Amino acid sequence: FFLAKSILGYTQVTTQTHGALCRFITDEASDRRMVLMSRGFLKSTVCTISDSIRLALRDPDNTRILITNYYYGYYWITLLYIKSSSRK
Image (cartoon, rainbow, N blue to C red):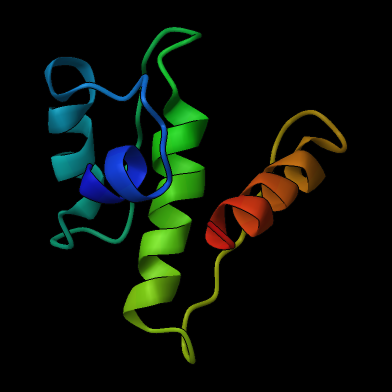
């Protein structure tokens, strides 16, 4: 949560809506997680972009992340967001 809101500057991320989501995705008790939320709740921002950067910061030499999407080309846009966000 702190990374997304304070460091990456995603001001729309709120404790009320995203606090539990951030705790859920950072819980390392399980390797697989599924997040279901309506459109517009910043799932990609929190779960894909912010968490990928968090994982890479934690272990930059051994982190591998696979990003896929149903829509062709959307993964590329996500990678561009991660790249631009990681330079902040």
